[in-house]
Length: 341
Image (cartoon, rainbow, N blue to C red; front, side, top):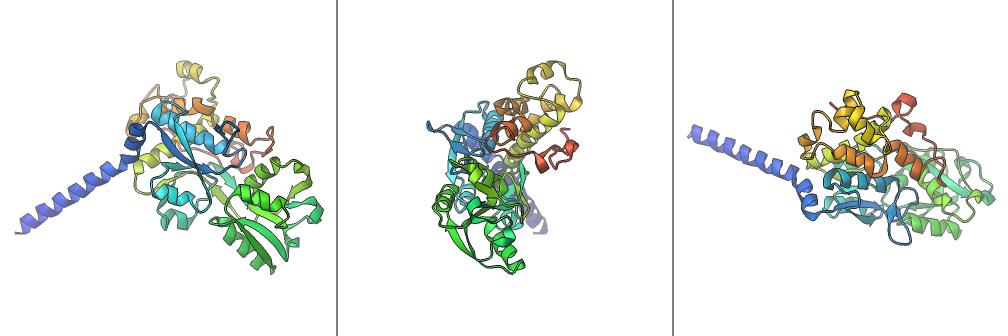
């Protein structure tokens, strides 16, 4: 009897483990069968994720979606972009509507645990700020006592704003908005004195104004906002694929691998890390169910992390963001990828 119970327990454990392994690979299988990556993005934030007049999406977050598609499907164009708001984005992930969320989302404790999401890394270190019209005559966030403030619901900015004003013994009236487009509209219409969101988002919003020089981003940064892509909790293999695609883009910049020299480095690099990254040795892709050139394709899609940053939100773009904390760790920033070994 004891032996039967023991064997039954082992069999059950083995079956559960097998189900877990099958589930782990389910997203990869679904994406391959579908032939398209469903990627949750912003409803429209220039520089990060926005469609042009012809419906073609571009931006910093869009580039990550295309890199994952290139790694998994061999084609960076095989992406369906799903616009999500601050309130719908996480439901889109958990329900399976999107395979990955790349939408200026802050990695927090409650989102990681209570919402059962897996944030696979940080692709932009940010912080919450405030934008006001120069005509308001304000030069500091501490001068906003009694102000009306536009704020997106379903975001970390709500609690940050409440904490900041409470700590500084100030009052404010929130003007709740669902999207950045609505926030821009309400702010420009004078419905609020200030608009608050991530500083990068403020820079992107201001760049789209007809007269961006008439608006200023106040100097105070009131929070830390590590932004990164998220996937559903439970499919570890899919999480690994998105995580290491992001890491491949970051590592490529560190190692000097660009979209322009990558073919030459495939033939000539003697750096073991570069060789493993580009699949000329070790074939690391097999560990995730991918081929040897998955990372090479991800880099070729839009370039390495530095190329993507410069092209979409860097100092030479209308967004005009400096690398700052998002510089490589070798240049005093926080950006680094674990070793490819």
